[in-house]
Length: 301
Image 1: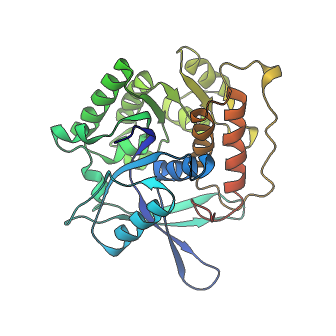
Image 2: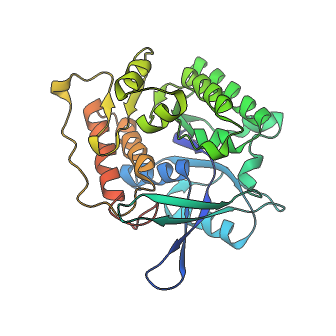
């Protein structure tokens, strides 16, 4: 099979969102899945070679998710279906500023069984970039987490893939903060491409300022690194201030659900197409600015 440009690993859930009437609209989302979709869209159908690695059920929602992924030009050959598990579900609501709150039903999610056996990591296909997040690591068992991280460390060391990571810290998914901090710190040592958010890093590692986060990431030589700062635009470790593009604010903010995920997608698309750092940063920022102006994690094409 042809080597993928990007392989994203994680969980997809059914998204329940109140519509304009009295009911709910059903969609699908998940941080790494959102990024995979937006990467494929930004690259264009003829150029995209993006795969998704997860487990879902055999229920109707799982089948609809697979159909959606195919429609978004994602390679779904590595989406496994479990007969005794389901797809996770979450409901989201947003306030007047676009900030969101969530309710989850994911205890029986098939994705929680990812990498539960020694040989399961060998099913990961070859890719130029392999992408995962802190949520990917949080939802799986500690042995599965160890198995996946060891595999990715070995692949990165041999140059088989560039490992990309976004900490995407969600405290409720972790056993405790100390475990999350230790796992994330090790994952940053493994990763070749860093796409952290300032707020997540400050919450998890206790940094007292943006400069502290930037200084910490500056201590490693990355293949690529973009530190997300919301409406202020991303920070770069390599570009001089005079070479940084302008990052205009979004025209309107309706829903910030996938702001960081869509930034990652725009950034990956530009990076995979060989664009320079300023173009990668701007590609991510512009796509995120578009996405926050519409409801839902994955906006209409």
